[in-house]
Image (tube, rainbow, N blue to C red; front, side, top):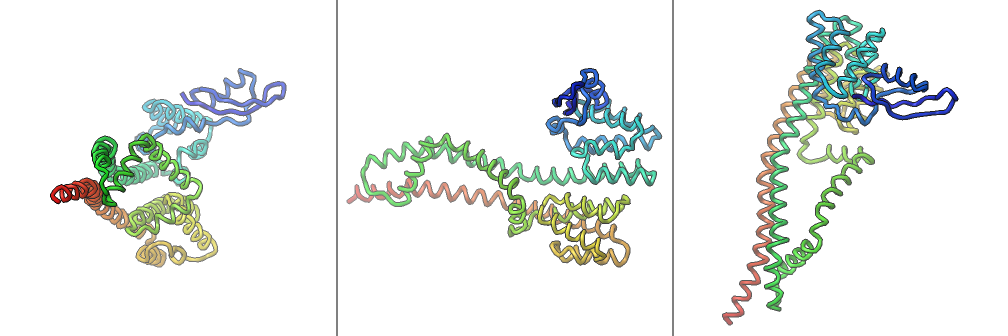
Length: 387
């Protein structure tokens, strides 16, 4: 059942706040009044919303579009979709249905849950309501969400195999250094012979791992949190570094997101300024987002869009310029989106295919280091024995 946060006053004027479980915000308001609390703020608990899955959004949007196209009234369509959903999502849909039943438009009801329904979603729904084509608009939204989910899944799945290889390789090397090498190192130390520098380095590293192996998980977790901290505190720095990486893997992804979202919004009747604002946030890179916001201000002042997007590849700028002149901007943006999405797929496939041999080479070099560290002193000992 959904949880709602509230803040308000009791009959004696004292302030009160807390959380309350209820099927919807309407029911939550009734329960608070029964408790003698007059709510000033009543909204769904942010912590509860985190369990919501993005792919559910495309699913319920597709269902809602199908029901509306079949001629079912919006309130009944929302009721049907909420029955098929569960948990927090079901409660949210029930609350939206009650707001619509109370006279609110669907876009206005969705604004209460703007952290679940993105800005472009609400704007597209509003445009669909004004044009009387809400079912078709919802279908286009579902298509868009599914394509974006598929792109994210491609990126995520591409990293599964290299991640597994890295974990296995790390585990094997740790086993060698923590359990195998100490026994070999002891033999070398007992000989009291002069050892090659590579063997000395190997001994020091082995002793360090033997003494402090338990720190490895903490270092790993700390590194993850460190990266997250940097991304949170200095997002522009991280995003700038990503744009400067030599292979430029993610740039086509950013371009594809921008062009696809902008074309989608313009086709749905959203004004250019609002469409630029929403599509800027869809890219996932703060540096590119800032560049698009600058372009938005330039367009507001009467400038052209193509003349303000120097951060993007020249081919895209030329396509946008051609679209502005010929009146085929949406068509050209869709063409660019498909082109750069394919480019991203090619670069991702190439990069992943290169990761495997690169990891094998790195592991081979580590094994070579270990073998040389063990074999060289043995070879020297054999030479001494022959003498």
